[in-house]
Image (cartoon, rainbow, N blue to C red):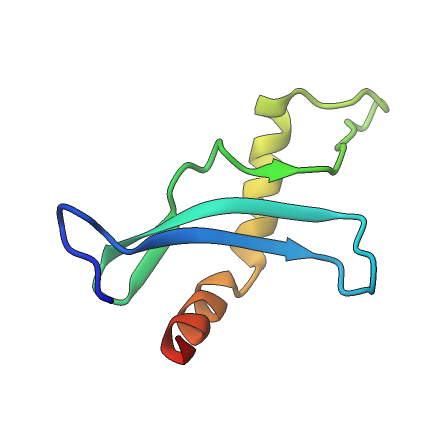
Length: 89
């Protein structure tokens, strides 16, 4: 079912390692911002079980890690996968 300006198409994307029991993953919400265009609903709202560390070896805060996680997500072909899944539905 197509979304509308008042009720846009939205969902969640989970990327995790491909093994029988994945141990690392990223999850975020997406929303259709224009017909055929999906974007992260909240770039600061990425959920993960990863712990990122700074060059000094300290665990990064959520805000510090968000910048790196968003860079990683930007490199993933997740929008293509969302549209592939939607076409199959």
